[in-house]
Image 1 (cartoon, rainbow, N blue to C red):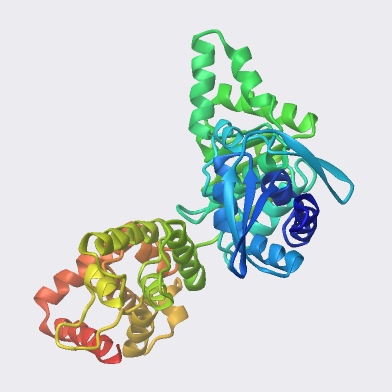
Image 2 (cartoon, helix red, strand yellow):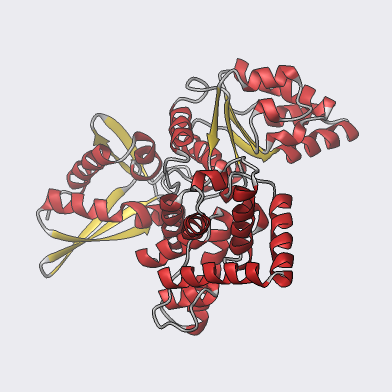
Length: 453
């Protein structure tokens, strides 16, 4: 039988080459090989770790790689059993480091104290063209707090992943031991300060926010227009920066467009890096669905993920539909299928046995083609009658047949306000009632959509 310490030394050396330094220190460094039991041609290897949380992470993310390293070192087929082992054991040497086994600090307490969500990590963040720059900036900040981009200001619409990205920075900092880290919203910062003034405990509030290595402020636009809050945030910002700490903020708009934001704060926010996160494209929406399903221990078929992503464009709506889909599958004890997706989205064709989902892009292209205008024209600013009417019909169909929210229809057609969509919806609906010719036009477009699908 092989020497346990020598074997595990080799495994750890191999793991160091395939995972990041932060990940190795957080989850793998303080593990050990407890026993090897021969079971026929296979070896069952008991691996000890210092907490239940670490065991869960190893099982979900690194078990396969650990098995591969053990098989490389031992030359045998291996099976790994992870055990939570609290006792302190003799240290082992890995490339010159003395590693006390099973004395690791449980990361869950630090994560909880920082007010971070476990699922908001870089590993769980899907990257595409709409968020590639923001992701790269966040990774750079996570690697070098206070040095890469300080502050980092991330802005974008609702549900595009700003908070996830910011919390991933905090999570990486906690795992590396670069804390303390604190996440809060602009509203919470405001409420804390108000309560501090009321209770004459502002010193405690200042200590809470200023004595951190990384301060993560979500929806920072909330502090705009509040003089005392902006004053306190200005000094908090300076105090953290003065100690080499990092500030990361998110907002629904860039600093230049935040009304009633003090000029000195606007200047401070712009001193680092300002990046935007755009709406998720089709590929990103598909990836998000696959990741969210995997977090729920479900392997979503690719065609199902693509079908849902083609029909639902808002990320939060995607997550909501996924929960509904998985609940339906569990309740009816059925596997997730295209038929189930179509049933829940209510987009099947009643007279066809081969129904499929109609996407917003298909509707836009068909309406533009039907009226003889370009797609860019229909999305653009031109207000001539030959463009406005097709644009309004398009809004009507997207709203009534694809059941998209007013805001989403407006975003698809050049970023228009939801009131514009409401006006178009009402106008086309009324004219269809009064004018049979218009009614027939819209019906013909719908029939073309069904034939093409």
